[in-house]
Structure formats: structure tokens, C-alpha cells
Length: 299
Image 1 (tube, rainbow, N blue to C red):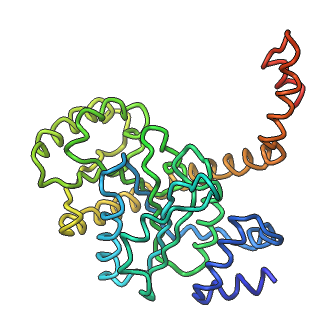
Image 2: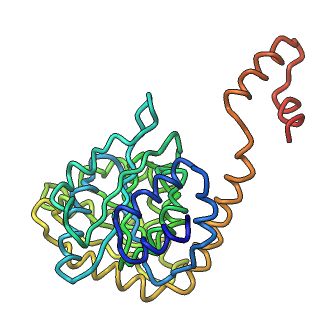
């Protein structure tokens, strides 16, 4: 069954791809056989789009799709949305903003729920991305939730990570410095027509200056106005330049990080949070309860 499904995906059958993604996301019977049938297609580049809420990530992705389509590229977009607190499904906000591309034959858009994941990504994002690589796309764009400093998992998945910032982010730069700011391969200074854009760009360059000695390349800052589709061609050029320069070295790091995340998930798979809560309730009756001794019993 999985061999037939994979064969259909390789022919560009979007319905089969959507069905296979649901199979993986919900861990239905046969999903692991499907994953074991995939080959490592390292020719498909992954672009990660991340940044604080309100930076205009979805509008920027929409403009990037338009520019890539003009270059005759076939694009898959994974929008990681916040989960519904009731059914853990995606809230689909990003798909509304990209409605122009729903029926385009060279664009595939899928929303994924975080399902409680704290790193801005879906728990099955690695497997789904590898599946999409088999479907004949030229690149995959992953837009993360936008949860701030903890949103750094994308750097372990994307060949190029674009951090989107806006002039109003000035006060937030220092708080983001320890996490989100360090993962950028390219900065997109969006809404750059707003007051303070020049000063913000200058300060961003100053903030990055101390790290230049430890990097092999300078991080470009590309000014964009996504709503007017300005600066998008320059952004895509900067992304392509990064991928051509750093591909080989980063590819090994990406595979290592992906393997680590998959092993971590498999080791934790047998841990049921609700069952753990029941065990806690029972053990807490003991006045000498110790969290570390409790954990030791189940490792």
C-alpha cells in the first residue's frame, strides 16, 4: 500500500501527498513503512521563515511564492499554526492570507498544528518535510508560529533560516539575541518603509558585528515591504547565495540534528503525560515525596 502511495506522490499527485501527510501526522498504520521507503533527496532546499509575531511572515511568504513562480519554480509551503486547545488542530490563519495560491498547479500549501510543541514547529515536521521532498518540488518553505526566542528548532531543519524583523522590534532585539537572532542566515527587515527603519538596520549591524569573527560570512540584511512585494527578489537572491555557499557543511549538521530529534521522539513515545499525572497523584500522598527520586523509578 505504501509503495503505491509513494509512487503516486512521485508523479505529482497532490491528493496522494495530502493523504500521506495526514497518515504521518496522525501516526496511522503503515506510516513508518512509508517513511522507510523514502530516499534522502538533498537537492530540495528548505527555507525557514521565522521571527516574532506581527513581523509579516505570512505576507512575506506570499510575496516569495509569487517571485518563485515567476522563476518557474514548484513550491511547497508548510505553515505551522497554533493549535486549537480543543482538538489540537491547526487554526489555519496562514492559509487565509495565501488564498491566491490554493488552486495553483505549482504550489502546495499545508497547515500543520504545533500540537503543544514549544519550538514553533509541528512534532512531525521532519518526517513530513522528507515526504514532500519526494514530490518533485524545487523548494520547501516552512513558516513557523512566531513564538519568540524559543522558536529556534527551525535552524536544525532548514538549509537557510530567514529571520523576519520590523523597525518596531528595536526594544526586542536584545531579548531575542540569545536565541532567535543567532540562528539567522539572512535577515529580512520587513515593513522597511516605516519610521525608524534606518536606525534599526544600523543597530542590527552593530549588534551582529562582534559575531563576525566567529562566522565565515556576513549575515545579509535585506529590506522588504512584503505588502508591495518590494525587496523580494533581493531576498531570494540572498537565500540562493547562502545555499550555494554553505550547503555541504550545513547538510551534515542538519541530518545530525534531524536524527537527534527523531531518536528523542522515539525514546519518549512510551511516556504518557496523563498516566504520569496519575502516578504523581498517588506518590504525592507520601510526605517524603522527591521529584528526582520519582523520575529515577521510571528511567
